[in-house]
Length: 115
Length: 120
Image: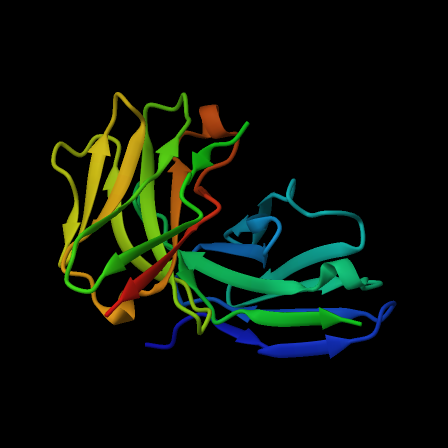
């Protein structure tokens, strides 16, 4: 079975440019999460979806960040305009709710560098 | 408030020895789950072990076991017979499962991590 698929693996862009990160969750999973990992702040939950609906976006740092999940098999995280402090690894993860200890399956991450 | 605390930024252990990585958590939710993930230098997040708050026995998965002390709110990871390939970052995480307490179902919150180095 294919795992969570993220693209691109690496993204280098210049300050002010729009960046779009993509994620395909595991088929059948009903939860999708976006995390950001930095040395200073560790792993932060940005936003998560249940059945394509955003449930909690309190972790989204500012209005420059937006996330969508138009269908069960695709999600995007967009940063517009990007800034150097957005440089981080962005992980997408998915899980299937069965009422308790469902683990998250993580993608390989997108390494974003904003120059 | 910090929900997951990992007080050891770095640990080292001799190959074949056992090592304990500490994790304490804070929650008012009676129903929650505790997870450990491994992140090697390649960057992927690998699930290791899970403990539910109502589980009577400590979870075990091969060389990994979770020393769950509910009253102390601790969920330490024990790795037995360390191998060189165990060198990685280790993250403790908690999921509160009650919408009433967490305000959102299924949110997984991570600690800061512990970097483990296994020496030959």
